Amino acid sequence: MRFFIFLLAAAFAALSCVPAPCSACALPEKIERAAVAGVLPFPSVLCLYLGSAEKIIAIPPASMSAAREGLLGELFPGILKAETSFASGTGANIEELLTLRPDVVFYLEADKVTGRALENAGLASVPVSPSKYGYDVLRTYEEWIKTLAAIFPERAEAGEKAVAYGRRALELTKASAALIPQSERKKVLFIVRDENGRIVTSGRNFFGQYWCESIGAENAAAEITAERLNAVVTMEQIYKWNPDVIFITNFTKLAPRDLLSAPEWRPVEAVRRGAVYKMPLALYRTYTPGPDAPLTLLWLARAVYPETFGDIDLPKQAAKYYKEIFGLDVSAERAREIFAAPQSGGSGR
Image 1 (tube, one colour):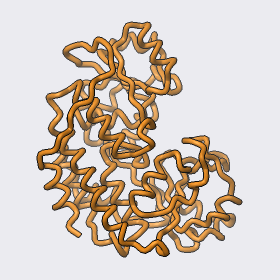
Image 2 (image 1 turned 30 degrees about the horizontal axis):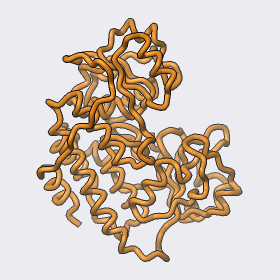
Image 3 (image 1 turned 60 degrees about the vertical axis):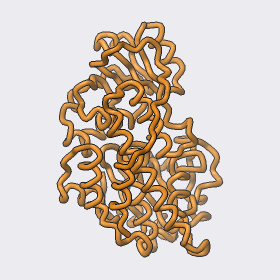
């Protein structure tokens, strides 16, 4: 399949990406200092959209750790100078944030307490939600781009190209996945976190459900209705589901080899097959919405259905994607380190 030829052509084609009305109040005409509170993937989106980290003065600590370990800090070393000490849970210490003199604060929309505190402090703010679009990863990314286009219209063209590429990637992936017989659909389990034996998965109300539906797989934990980190499961449930493939996110230090060497995991089909993979850490942790989402979609599809998607040269496409869409130089070697064909047993990051 010549995925990138089709995707890049679509990305440069005329595509309406009408900026969404900004919900912020009294944004300054010129924004030079932006802070992000609570929305962990958003600093990478903001950085890529602006093409620079120059305006980003504060980000959450978890966003900083991903930037240091992944691709974002390599491409935009200025992001590593952003302040993190202002953060307080999903919100912010308003007094400390005020000393940073932000022109705008992007904050977690669900955090009403922080929203009111920002308003009371007279800080211009923009609510951002990772969940209001039903955990649809690409739709969420697209809506974030529209929000930024309303605030920074001079950078809208790159955002439009990224949105077009994502849409085309999803269209082509779904078209190929639709040809997979129902009897051959794989059951996939996402391990989002694993802390002291407490396993958090993705039920039907988290990003894992979207990824599974997009690549033609079944979410092994779809019966779980709890959202986000509330979806705690036991080994007994995992034995019952017996997933064919397991993906481990970058929100845990757990690595494929930890499962492959653990006696309690040996009865699970994915472990017996060696189909346990660590998700890539690129511009951000790829389980969530973000600039890497179209590439993540193809990476997941190739891991679950190598016979259908195995001919995709994803490292080559990734290098072209970052260059043609965002103007970033990612070497073929670095792209290969991040998006090489999934190998079970790797440590990941």
